[in-house]
Image (cartoon, rainbow, N blue to C red):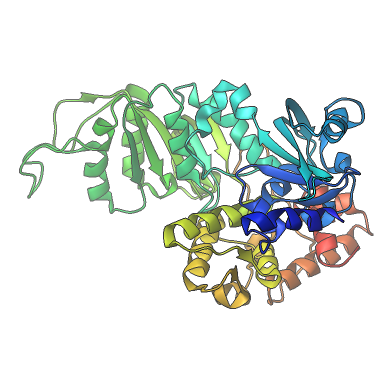
Length: 470
């Protein structure tokens, strides 16, 4: 009797025999792997895929030690001990994932038996305890929408506790929809100002005259209709944090007043003659290249340096290797709960399309796509026809084919091959053509091709496999 048959057999008494093992495992809130008695992988869930960087298809039949590179004694003796004794084991250790990152793990190793009592394998639950081991990272508590196991997101998570324990100004950069507002609020909640207000102001949403009174308030009689004093957002944020999103759209005259507040911690309300003192931390965000704005005379250089004391750059979703799969499952569970549905997952065609789509709107767009699909889908799985039609006809602009430079001291703009010219079509076709031309230019050197494309070597390897080049 193989392990999966044994599992199904053991489930009959609880009327669960019709549920596929993979679907059952995806319902667990932790990373799960099932090993047979030879310690080969039978199945693993989406959480473990995100944690390790390996897919279930890649892992099945492979020895678990190749997927779970952990420190549980010589030849993973604790797994053998659980098989020998038939008793569950809970132990702390760590794994090294595919991106060579060490992750502290609480392992719970449980023997699996068939209905007849025969030992058929092990169920291993892995809980990431890095947050518990490092109290400074409790910034993520209650913020379950900040998800990501990709190396670039781990860099962001590593910076957040540092930024939370200082009062210096922070500049968040990144494309629209990457979650800058979520990161800003998480930094505030983990800071000493958490008990005080977090005030968000969109600098591009209002005309200059209204934005000035919104930021700094006004006194009675300052203009027609000002029948009483209004405190303004800076005053409301006293002792807390003010988040100035889309700071790149701030009109030049207001940039001077913001600079004054940052330097002097005081300002005049509109129509006022007495300065108001405030103690406010400023976090600003933009999807624009402020260096370019400065060169075009649209942003003050002195304000840029005053805001750019600390910096976090949020990567676009297409550069967050492995995170799309994690976010798809997360948002599907979210909308299942909100809509009182029981959608189990995606068909292969729908899943492949969602994994290959470039998401110019990033995480926000992905969430909207899954919300649309969850509302439309009336069955147990999201099919291609349940997805928005535009993702099948999306044309990729040339600006998306290279990383943007945000002057964060880490990224440089890497141009695609000079001969590359987008020809339209879907993202798969364009990406395939990009890879071919990059490899042609580098005479097959994958490291150089990955650099031209702005990818890591593992990303290029995965995409070569996805497009059938290997």
